[in-house]
Length: 464
Image 1 (cartoon, one colour):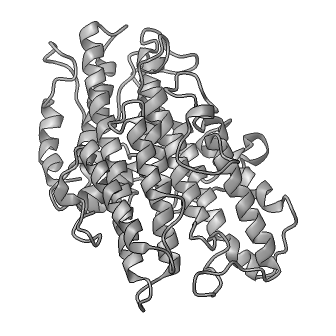
Image 2: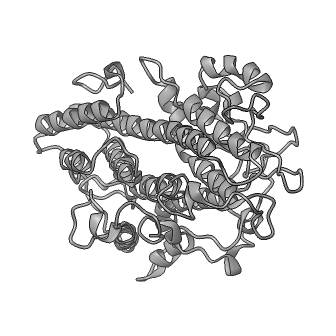
């Protein structure tokens, strides 16, 4: 978190800089995301399902990352074996697998050791854009854009395509059939293709967009349904819970952003480099409150990497906290004034979320430009080139899932025409491709109102 937010913390403890409930000078404010229930006086925050999906995405990436050594050590998968193991995460079955240990570790250990310790009844594909269609701003069976392949018409079909590609390469790899990079050498890992797709990075980054970003911005924090998102009931407690449906929806949006409950107390370096904070001094990390995931970490990375300072960690945090404070202070359905104030806090949080995501795409655009210019030199790495391109593409695909995006659909389509379907490699017109990337970068900067000082130069240097 930037110094500006750290200086704000004492003010937040005593009196909010922005009154969370307009007209009420005694409205509560807080510097941690903890809010007392009006039904039983206990903490009313709950978003375990969102944490669970973050853990599944993390573990899916780790599993794919560990596939190459398994094959090199003598595993000979048959058709269906690799897809089945990938589906363990994508179609997670808590009834049969909830007792298994997940893959999140910290130096202090974690409070929740098994999947079932975090939540139950959750998977990934059920919340993928298009598979949970109620209230989404587009029909993803027809409106999904960005991956030019006749087999891809929806977000799920893209995920399925990548799972089969990983399996096909794994089966070939196990018998010595290695894809070759442009120099004729074997690719560095089984999930890297000859055309420069790092399927592990593509999968993880896309899921962060098509699940976390999509669900957060287009479901829980949206207000297009009469009885969903910000229009959820705020009068009665949910069955078996101590919060209202609206409080829970807001919490779920916060959970998909991925911040810790004390996110505002930490610097950008701490969030980006550590991400886990023993806030209660228990000696271990509670994954439901003390571990930073996904987008919240990337926001800190981009803030600390800015040439002209940005503070999206602070903007998102303040929006989420002050919005939740409005709900905690209300004893019934929101007034028109309170709803307008809540929507403003939502807009602040989502705007910061999109800006950080767009800046992350720009960061990897610059990495790809640098990689392209290094082709033919001793400093060139095909593995890095494929990785950076895939992170760029995977994150960029996610930008379409925000209903309040500043990037209109026609501009989004143009962005992916410029990014294309693979990096320019040796023998390609790298200079022309890098010029397209600079055009894409400048368009993103313009549409998302990003300071030109942070975009970088024609060689991908001097910016994010």
